[in-house]
Length: 637
Picture 1 (tube, helix red, strand yellow):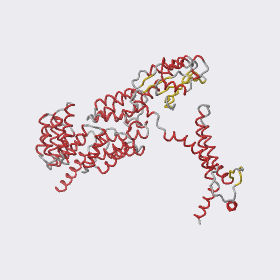
Picture 2: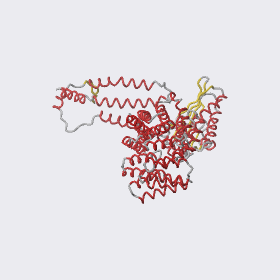
Picture 3: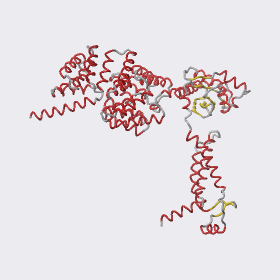
Picture 4: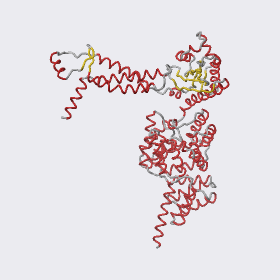
């Protein structure tokens, strides 16, 4: 019964054409709102006018619905809507074989088309700055004379003055190509224009296109009481879309105009240069960049490029230069600790981490979560890292760098069932962006997770994708060699090994370094005899280098190949570097293997206390030795 009543009510709404009226009202309302928004600026209307129009339209909607229920629009005028019985009686008398096109249908169609035309650019409009970022060329710019709108002729001189100052300043940038004053004003004069007030944005845009410039700077000088106000718009010469608007104001004395011009010039310059440089920054970081200094931004971009190439000393210098220019450049300050840490310089890394952490309360929610994660990386455990990375994903779950870092933490904890899905999610986002990952390790550490779980076909597939974006990358060659050694394809393995060796020789790596890397490859592939051969070769080439002593020592101990020799080698390493946490870890693990549990616990605890950041292997070994000591004491009772 209830369904029947609802059905009748629905049919009655359709019969009284309520839906048609609502559609027409909504479409008309949208058009009115758009027209109002477009008229506010040129007519200098108060900013609250669009809000008032929207409220009035919302209030009018119920009235329109009620009126559409009561009345009907007919060719004979507005009439009260017939009852159901009257309508049925009329249908019996008048039967038509053709369905007539009602005027309301045509009106609705016209309104819907109008809405689509107005809404399409807003929904599907491409960010106009994308064109500036994607172009490999310098940004070409035309600066028009500024229009004096003060009614005071004393400011006429600054119409050309501001133009000249902007052109001179912007011409010093390597990212911009500025059309000179002579060519701009010569073109204006050739058209017989002596009054700058007659130059509209459309006319200025046509001049800009004739000078083959992408960006037009169009401005004005205004006065309000004792204030002078300089406005400037950066406009796409072709589409006349506004990239950015600037407004600088100050006291109206003529001396202050230089400060206003300097401020305007700096804002315009920084905006244009940063827009150009931004294409060189990985998409992961673009929304996190918080500087208005184009020079600081430039050094950050150079630092990022060095970091992604694993040139960490250069990255440190470049990030430091960016911070020296803008001490509040948080992203540069956040990247600097990792550039230090990747060189093993943890003291400097922690120092910079704490500097950033001290500013935490001044940050946005995302920046704060990122800073908390960085602090956890250096001073806490992976479990705090996971918590803060998940907080970052709650704020924005479409940044692949957060998934990458989360997967890295899971990998370090040997939780590959958790790392693989988040690594894949990061790559999915890059694919949706139609962009390659920020560096090759997005592929490599996913490949490592596949390697550790025996998913060799998937590992091979992911490296194949990596090769397309990062051809001849040495770390990728290394892991491809490990994969093919693991599956027993020696021909392909040797191909990638030879590529890796060639890279090392071209970059003047020592023979001992190359031997150590080969030992690591064979070790990861489970070919222990070959691994031992290369570890011994590396030690033979650099017998006094403690790292070579420790590498062979840990290999012999961890794989139970020769505990006595392993302990002798690590003791030699500790004579050279007695407080090295890694060497202490090797010795403690060797003593445990010899069932010297109490002594092993003391050494491993010392290693744990000296470690620069959390180390999961030391944690696991320390826990295992603690349990062994407890069991040993229980047995002794």
